[in-house]
Length: 191
Image 1 (tube, rainbow, N blue to C red):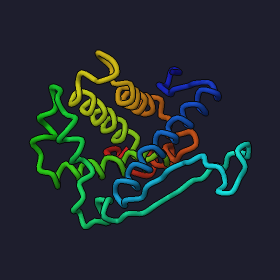
Image 2: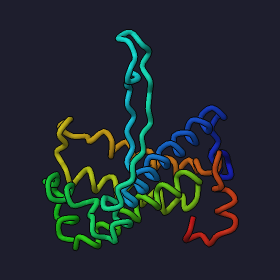
Image 3: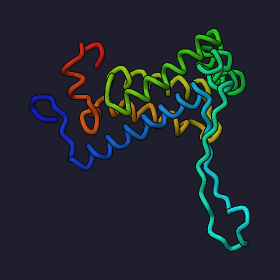
Image 4: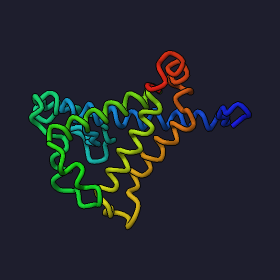
């Protein structure tokens, strides 16, 4: 930081943090699209149907839509959180999602995915996304504690939580995002 409290990092650091912010935002945005609208994706490496055994492999991206698997497209009948809440929660904070009504937890989940996806990808609502994303990911970690792959740390959610908080503190939305413009044109509570 300089004497005025501004954060100064090398250009390479700013580019790396911005790319990480956008990539994580796209992860959340895809989760929202997939779970909200029932859009699936597979990436297959398959040989052409009539190809000889040594033929090169063809990579295929396949998208499918099943409206009954999307929370929004199913008319809010399909719960994107039901399997997770029913089967995976056993930690000290498991009581929070287990005691919320299904419709409420589904709404909060889809809202969080969309909000974090938009905020991180475009660099808006940096403070709200920073604290909200941190709290969400820490709650997920502690609702499934101890994790299945490590005795203490759920790598995915702890890294996501700390990264999102770091984006907020570094004002990562300024680089390859509209963060600086957003903060100058919106009330402080929306930053």
